Amino acid sequence: MSALHLTLLRHGRSRADDEGVHEGRYDSPLTAVGRGQAEALAAYWQAHPPGFEVAFCSTLARARQTAEIVTAAKVPLYPDDLWREWDNGPLAGLPRAEALRRFPIPAFRHDLDPFTAEGGESRAAIRARALLALEGLWRAGANNVLVVSHGGFLNSVLCELTGAERGWFAFRATGFATLTLRRDSPTALLTGVNLAPHLAGPLSPGAATDKD
View (cartoon, rainbow, N blue to C red):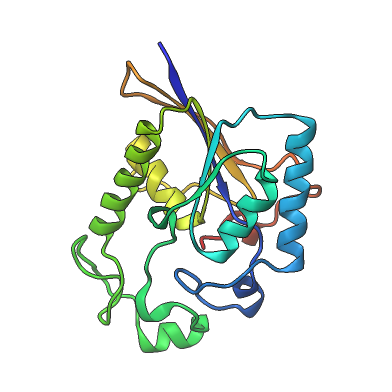
């Protein structure tokens, strides 16, 4: 039976990472470091071709730029709003300390509540969007697909596929996960997480937990 092989790639380092602000829907571009990370991955995949048939990416600049670099116009690339990061409402672009002061984290937030009291996506809306995005890949007809998105949303996708509601999957900048979905089985075979063979040096704790 045929299978769908997915590579889920987080974008490179963005300007918001350097600014120390909440990212989410804040549309910041790649930094020079981020472009270098993407170029290193492009070179690695040039030497070790992954055989992607098609690629999808978030329409936010940091993910779209990463996708354009790593595919190098050699793979059909489809930007899609479904693959954008969580909508964090008024937190987008705010310094973290200011965000915490203005929008304290509640002791409990229902899955149907918005991201903040002043707006943003609910957990239920994020889950629904993750499933719609996956359905689009499933129906695309390709067997080997690259997706370039964001740490938070890629976690939502992996949680839907694996049932790991309380899990968190690390994604460093330009780190990627690989998995296989068989078309005759409900099982998702996760074969790698936070892979970065193109990057030298040890993984710092901060890099392991980047979300946006």
